[in-house]
Image (cartoon, helix red, strand yellow):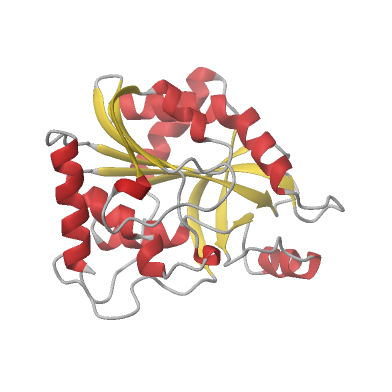
Amino acid sequence: MLNEIKKSAAYIAAQTEDFRPEVGIILSTGLGDFADHIEVKYSLEYKDIPGFPVSTVEGHKGRLIFGHIEGRRVVAMQGRFHYYEGYTMQQVTFPVRVMKLLGIEFLFVSNASGGINPTFRVGDLMIINDHINLMPNPLIGRNMDEFGPRFQDMHNCYDSALIAKATSIADEECIKLQYGVYVGTTGPTFETQAEYRYFKAIGGDAAGMSTVPEVIVARHMSIPVFAVSVITNCGLSDQIGDHEDVQAQGRKAGEKMAKLFVKLIKNL
């Protein structure tokens, strides 16, 4: 796997004239239009990158976008990979490893999630301040010592300094924020009512099918992480889960999230 990661990074570096991004951004369902805020310099299709998986989920475009936001060099993933697509956890997190070799110093992650906290409403932005992992851990298997330790500490896995900066920016921009614990599940089914009640009982505020593996691998490589969930449905209501509605709600909240990300990247 390490050789594949290095091969992929070398190909990308050659195609982008050694463009060295400072910030990696993972865009979720319905939030792919965030790339409109990037002064694009290079764009690569996943299918053309050696070793890269290909996104199979509607709403995930499958491109790496390189460019600038407020003078900062960034790389954005328009579409991510999920365990439920049949990929291994090593494949799901492969792009984060590659972005590390390309030079990223921070990782920004977005996702669409089902609200568990009864005070949340559809369209809210939730800053993730911790998670509960109910998926296979991506660090299972032989450790890649070149990237990080065998036993990774997960304190401050969502960087408290970045959260504090985001809170200040949100106050200035009058963006309402929620804060909470993200429960990572395998999917692809939306959760049952009993599962949502269980997630609430163990301390969850929102649930989704991504993010946690990417964050674990980022922390394994000592990359500070900032993550936002868009609450696209309320899991403890009688509302039926629907992927098209998740995409629509993600697009509606996308501008608020984009403003927050852009201002935070500017102030890193």
